[in-house]
Image (cartoon, rainbow, N blue to C red; front, side, top):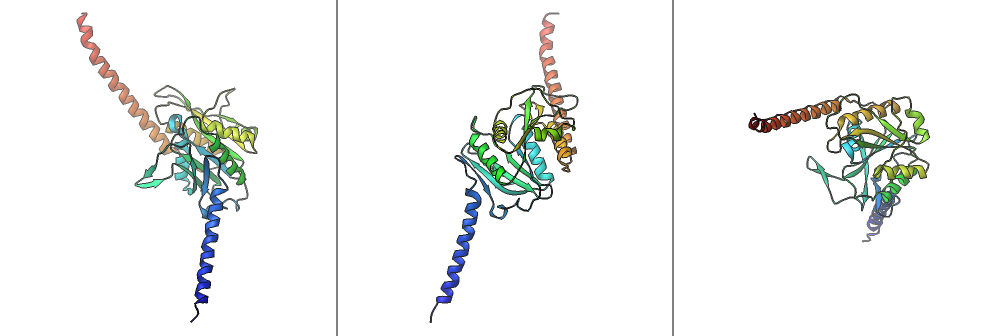
Length: 283
């Protein structure tokens, strides 16, 4: 009895699997740089082809005050964004993250179709000075997706432990984005210097058809700054009409301030207790 029909079905199944595998490989490998690669899950390879207007692309890196990671984490959670892939880079240190026991890539890509936003979040620091290939690969991917506006986030080093008064948000941007942000109470510094991964991204934007911008706010390098992150989120919400709630971040900021004030008071009390006997020696 011939088994040709069974062999034919088996071969057809193998061919289908090979075709699926090839789709997966094309999805990942055509976004490869010299030392980095953007990997998009196969079901999201063409995720932006159904979008009528170019999406906003926001990138958050670790840095002063953890501004970038706080802002992007908050947007991912509030907008219930979907992870569509991740970024591999030889410039990342060998660090793995996990949340509630589940391992996660330290450098991930998310997408919200409802709000037309793409977010890249990196939760580990880069090896110093090694951002060029990563920036080039990411911005090449952005161009392939017809992205136009690219926003980076950064804290400006400020040694004040406890800040008072309103939180200022500053921005530096190309002319196309500058037109959008001028009427939202954002301060434009006359000149300055941007360094790190954000600078590499913005340089790639300047070299390509991408509109780059960086939002900045003062932050202490030793402390997370949810208040500054909330101030930047408020501006992003206004400019791009994205619904975001800021109350929780401001509550976290107030709690941090309260804790710092308690620590400062205890330190001051201990200091006075130690110096009191010394005074007695001279009375």
